[in-house]
Amino acid sequence: MKTGIIGGTFNPIHLGHLAIAREMQQRFALDRVLFIPAAIPPHKKVAGLPPFAQRLAMVECAIAGTDGFEACDIEGHRQGKSYSRDTLQQLHALYPEDSFYFLIGMDSLHSLHTWYHFEDIFPLCNLVVARRPGVAKPASTDALPVAIRGQFCYDSVLKTFCHTSGSHLYFLTESFINISSTQIRHNLADNRPVEEALPQAVYEYIKTHHLYASGKG
Ligand SMILES: Nc1ncnc2c1ncn2[C@@H]1O[C@H](COP(=O)(O)OP(=O)(O)OP(=O)(O)O)[C@@H](O)[C@H]1O
Ligand SMILES: O=C(O)c1ccc[n+]([C@@H]2O[C@H](COP(=O)([O-])O)[C@@H](O)[C@H]2O)c1
Image (tube, rainbow, N blue to C red; front, side, top):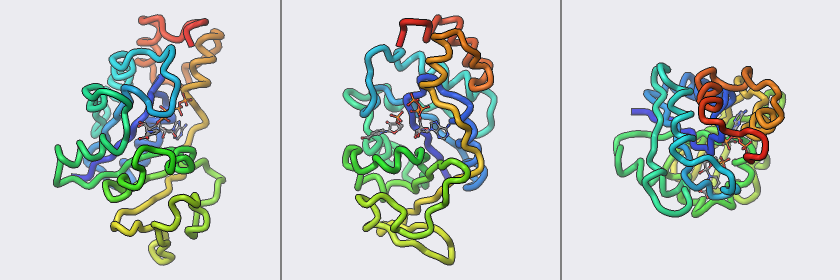
């Protein structure tokens, strides 16, 4: 089975997340894409963060009825920070036959060397990086962050980066939408429109549960 993974704080999940997940699903003919909310995001402020259960519920609202998309609460069952290395190891143990495609934003690629045991991550999955249209697709290891480039080579025939473990590093380009959860939270707090950035069901969940009102982070 080919399994895609998109992890995030999902505070809240938005149409940008869904668009890149769909692109990854189609490009790699994935059997399923797991949306994994971080219970305790390792590098983000947790003050004012809605509880894990609410961020998971918004993910469930966002993907309901979409073939191949599944919410995964694996990080809600662990103590401490939600490190991706630990999640990937757990998924490998649960699904030893699967190959994994782990989606991250370009910003995350550039800070990957600061992640917990980041070098363990490469052999555990293929990395799929979402980049903005117009940002050149890297075509040599020189374009990769210094901290990781030594572990990859560039195959100019296949136009792909290969890790020493045999995993690959791919770049997506088609579907980046210029949306962030931060912008959505600010718009909600200021009563500015957000409907175009959010699935309708997520918008309704936010309204019903009075999330992100002014003064609520
Ligand atoms: N519009 C987008 N297009 C492509 N990737 C995105 C987009 N927004 C977020 N991502 C990526 O999705 C993953 C989860 O993102 P996250 O939940 O932190 O959302 P965010 O919008 O970046 O949040 P915030 O604004 O609060 O930092 C990260 O790897 C991030 O880089
Ligand atoms: O494992 C780490 O050290 C680590 C550090 C920063 C981010 N991550 C993961 O990257 C994903 C996106 O994180 P964020 O903070 O941009 O929402 C999410 O799954 C996080 O758990 C993981």
